[in-house]
Image (tube, rainbow, N blue to C red; front, side):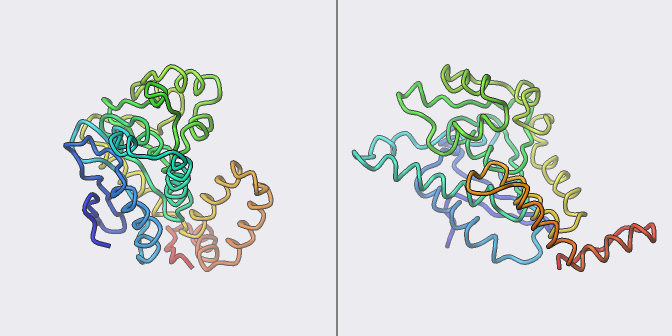
Length: 260
């Protein structure tokens, strides 16, 4: 599709996806959600040789400041669950992507923005970043996975507090709680995310994808994470990447992985 609200840039094996609605603080309207669905569900899987994706927001004020509340006001009776389910499906595409996705969080990551960041595999926060789930202020609850993923990252006690009070936390607090992987100076979020993806890109691509799937299986009630690990391990031992990795280890050289 022709993207209106996403800007896709490429830097070697890395794609930088920018939500480009700066005047609206990059709020997630229907068009933006559909473009995220298309990118992660159709575009990214069709691209060859991509080893990582950075997801960020345009400007300095916000990664994503939330969902488009004006559109929410248009939701008719009986449509709320359908809206939430669609959001879940789109964010699951990100979480289950075989290509690592790093959120470069600049400014506010609130509501749907915090949920979007949590759907990514890793998160780099600028020192001025703010995280929160303020939906209770509007008389609703998070609908894109916030009540579930926040618990996974920071535990039930603190997650319950943030969800019930709508309090925001800063980048350092988010780091202390385990919500983000690193805090960097404002403006360096994308560069830091690229550097992290560069480190991951040096590893075996099949192994990276299987680690993502195995970790996700821990939180999937329909799967046994240990069984998923056993199967994934078996797959990786039959790859050319394993042959190359083992040979490189013995020969004391850097491996050259092909993703096969």
